[in-house]
Image 1 (cartoon, rainbow over the protein chains, first blue to last red):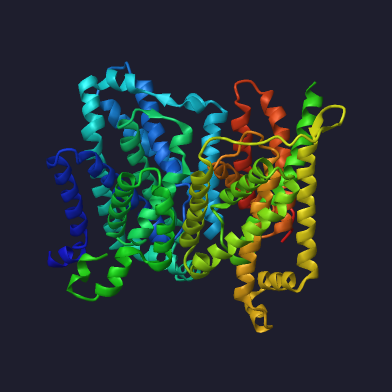
Image 2: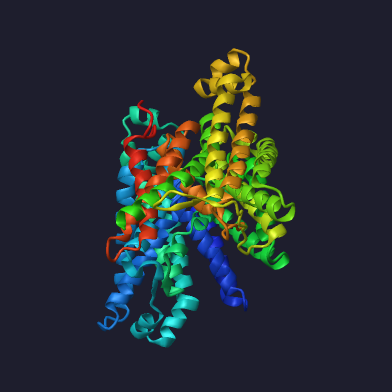
Amino acid sequence: MMRTLDKYAAIFPVLVVYAVLFLLGLNMSGMWQLMATLLFYCALGQAFNIFLGMTGYVDFGYVAFVGMGTYGMAVTITSLAGTGLGGLTIIAGYIMALAFSGLLSLAVGAVALRLRGAYFAIATIGVNEGLRFLIEGTNLWGGSGGIIFTRQLNDILGKDASSALATFWADVLVLIIAVLAAITTIVYMRSKIGYALTALREDEDAAKVMGINVTMFKILAFMTSACFAGLLGATAWALKTPYVFPPEVFEIHYTIEAIIIVMLGGAGTLLGPVAGGLIYGIGKYVLSIVLPGFQLLIFAPLIIIIIVAFPDGVVGGIRNKFGHTALGRFIL
Amino acid sequence: MFGEQLLSNLAQGIVLGCVYGVATMGLSLIFGVLKVVNVGHGAFIMVGCFVTLFFFNSLGMSPFVAIPAAFLLGLGIGYVFYYSAIRRLLKAPELSTLLATFYMGVILQEVVKLIYGSEYRGFRWKVGSLSLGFTSLPMAKLYAALGSIAVALILYAWFRKTRAGTAMRAVVEDDEGARVCGVNVGGVYAMSFALGIGLTVASGVMLAMFLPVGINPYMGAEYTLKAFVIAVLGGLASPYGAFFGGLIFGIIENGSYTFLAAIPGVEPFGMTRFLSFAMLLIILLIRPTGLLRAK
């Protein structure tokens, strides 16, 4: 019992942060939206970290999986509206979102993960953009006009319930996804999967020679990460704002945001994405109030400085310093 | 009718393809020497477009004059970015350089936005047009294509005939070996990055001829993506490969439009884009050294 507790102790700081964010948002008036945004960033970072942080591969088209999750939910809601399934439609939407992002990640992973480094990054950008233009070019799912399903969502859940979903429950679902992603991360890290991924991140060829099935573990991490992205898209994008447009859900900027969050906090750490999400979210919020219109001009050089000065991120830096002390078990 | 359309699109494709080619050489050069992918590539092209705009509208000068000016400005920007950040990130994981170059692009975007605002701008350089029978090509675009070919030839000569160019090729082949032979590898890295950025900014001058109303601080993203496809066509690490890749890309992009427009229910603009990214993936998987080079 003690040993199990010790093994998973590092999850507690993460849960504490999530609880604090949730309670702050709940009890302080006007804070909910900010806290929801911070939770979304943390969840996004946590989800992306499972692949980016643990394998060291840079997926520059990560947003495609968020987009596919959004489409999964949107397509389900529009095609099941009027069947009288009610809340079951949302569950079906989640299954569809998982199927969309899971299948896409399986296909992309099986093919593109044989590329390494910059080649993999470029290939994944290609997947992201290719998918966007395939939808636009073939007029799939409304083509470049996208899908607007506010009316269908209102029909299914009723007006009050769907507005409560958009303003409150979708954010709670994001929190649940964030917690699930954190639990998955620590379970992976503390099992054979984590050791295999660390080995392949440090030296893929050596890991292969040692008999680790690198392909399987890479695809596992890639799919896990993509499925969480799909859930996030279905929740934070589809249920919260019931429309989906290809240029928006495949916007490369969101991938960059996810990368920064992971990088700021410390890639491959459990606490990193949470720290990164908080720093990025709060920083962006403060700059948008203090210097509206100029935030990117300040943000861009700041990010470059951080990348140069703290290559291991905040948590990575702290762990290098305090990792061997009694605090160490809480910093992972 | 269909044939005439196709021929006209192909002619446009060849002309634009030369410009695409020179606009990608900088990306390939930087990747070839430093193994850094410049994700902010398009923003540097955008700067070149604005330099042209400044020369044409504010100074009333020919775009030809803007080419060397844009090149020098790019060289300067390249050196600043190299010594302030890239140099310290060469040993870091890809993640760092990918993010850093992306945000360098953002810095340029925001600075240009501060000066020019974010509305679409452009200019028309009225120097007549060349009639080919089935279509007519504006001379401005032809000059841009010729300028691109000239820049590519100058770069080729520079690589072959100068000591600095030879040193750069040596570093591409084997940086340890070059170091042993007394090549200042750090200096070559800096020069390659600056030269790559200089070329890219200069290529923006050529591209501006094709954008009479389309110059905007945020125009770069599209060209970053196109440059990736072109660079992969040409083998990613080879500047000459990139030039021919650009030519092929221009022809396919414009040529396929005619065919795709003939298919009912398909939105041809989106499909040409899809085709180019499908091409990117296929080439990365079956022939990562590029179309032109046999390994």
